[in-house]
Image 1: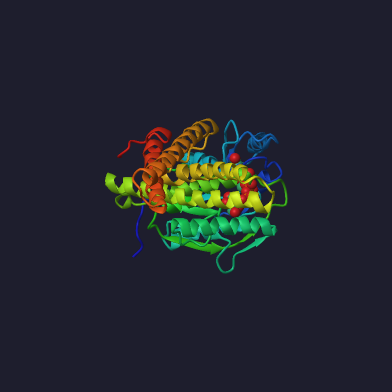
Image 2: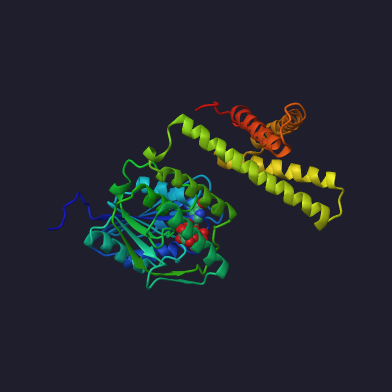
Length: 387
Ligand code: GDD
Ligand code: MN
């Protein structure tokens, strides 16, 4: 028996645009030609005040358009370019359909696939239908090797890092039942809104439909370095989201020890950096006086120690310049004090306590590192000593 749901047999198609004056009218027309006549379709263009006048073009087009019974077009004007994901989200807020389709405006996503996506949702009762480049029958046409690699790598990160089984979680072309995102908090950073939906709605049924992605003929891609860094930021955020709460350690003693052991591990890596850099400057690239080389080694290891401890040990990903530099200053100061403490301790242990040098060194290093850990935890990274 078919499940009965509250369905209004209406779909909404979200089409974000930024500088798509050469494509937008054509794509709106061809969507109109392709959509099934028995389904009411609401197309929503979300334009970010495109400098090339895409928004105005659509307005003018709508003024002269003959009204159709089953196809309406609306446009949302946003003030500034605020990213693809958030444009899509804005469109979703205005969508009336129970099924929502998301697609690009540059003909990379052939409108002919729309009916197939909708059919999958209606017929097979699935929640998300994805137009996929990476299943059998799917292809990409016109992309450089570099762009293909970026895409493949990003897909791999999503699949392995976030435990996604979908073959093309980066697709910008998909349809979904509106009710699956009800109550979800969508951040919509960057390009990858589908990925976010997939992570946050685990357990829904998904179908992938192969298609050929055609690189655009007109206009230019908006994918830039920021899009790529935003992507990795959002994967990181989604990764944290995906971690079940009960798996996050709550016992403060365990957290303290695990941070301390990370701190020691970083310290050991710093020793390796120091050693290698010093050797490099003495023998390798220049014939520096060994004390000068050692100073460079020390500075390098303090720097790498700082970066690893900030990002890994204390999981502080706020890398704004001013804050980071002030933390770096404190960290370097504690490192120098630590070095003095170590020196003093070795001297005392060997000279007065008559310990053998290797043992004295180990004890001194451990003590200085422990002090460093506690001080940096409290003052550099502003954590409670036990939390
Ligand atoms: N409103 C708005 N605001 N629209 C935007 C913005 C923005 O900041 N950035 C891009 N767009 C629109 C473009 O006008 C286009 O219609 C669509 O979003 C996709 O942008 P492109 O710049 O053409 O993306 P692409 O072809 O490089 O990337 C495609 O492939 C990716 C998968 O590798 C897109 O389909 C992505 O969605 C997809 O993730
Ligand atoms: Mn494109």
